[in-house]
Length: 117
Image (cartoon, rainbow, N blue to C red):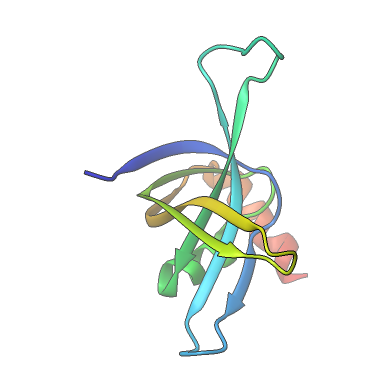
């Protein structure tokens, strides 16, 4: 079974794009998820990369922004490729199946008005 459930805050505005092949909407963002305990180095948060596709990507583009709280349900995916220097690079990210926008409605309305200006 591969299922991930996360709640955290966006570290930056989402990055929205349309794939060149197939014209599929994709939205990428990073979620800061607090840990239960601090590590020896003082780290108390993990930064998790999230990817949303199609209609969910468009909703994330429209309703998420830096600092906003979101709940994510998805699957963990690891991929690799060889970069220009010939080294294998790995990326681990969560492919979102569901996104819950957890910022209070009052703040979300204020955000929407700011975007429309």
